[in-house]
Length: 275
Image 1 (spheres, rainbow, N blue to C red):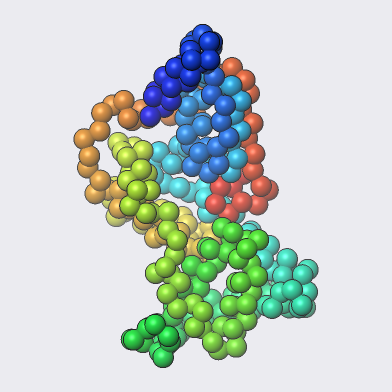
Image 2 (image 1 turned 45 degrees about the vertical axis):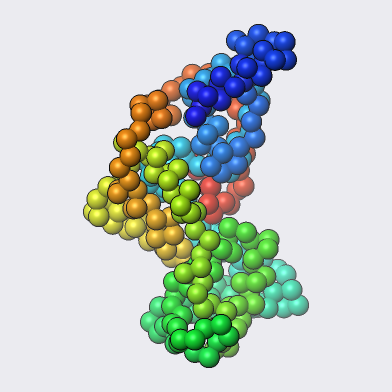
């Protein structure tokens, strides 16, 4: 794909009356786009025009199908919910408490309660059968919230307030309906990109990955299930070498024709600064 991009750049330069050898890529990549950008810069360092990579994914971990950096700041992001809710006041945050620690303590109490005592729910509109709300539904709410905090933190506050009062109906189906990155197309792309470098080919390797995740975050420990990375172990295509990233990106330390600008939030629960 990147070789085709290179040829397309040359063709566009030629149409514009420029030398194909002078063609440069101008790129603003976000999240997965940073993998494409960093890979292109490693393969064609002399073809980098202006490149901004924002919200960086660790490219090596991406190609190895073992996204460990992603969980490093998830609990920090959840901690910001408590501090921002307290700062907002009871008029703007329905789960407000007198201190951020009070908010965190009550939130942790809800997690513990649902972990030990899932709640059966029945009589809901559009549901003919009873269902069970578990703490995985609650974790799904957390993951949605830290991914889009500006839009979802207020919604999470309202739901937590309802759950604290004994009404868990807003959590019904949260985990099952989680907007996973593992759509059919997305999963095929990730499995193809990690083909031949996939670290998660055994249950033991996946268990190690899960244990690492659990050690790093108590709020989003569902992340490996959300990603569904283990499914790539069954992906057995016949892909040509030209589609494979054979070398380590970090080992291709060639200066680019113009410096790449990396950008990140100080607390990023999905693409943390360490990446």
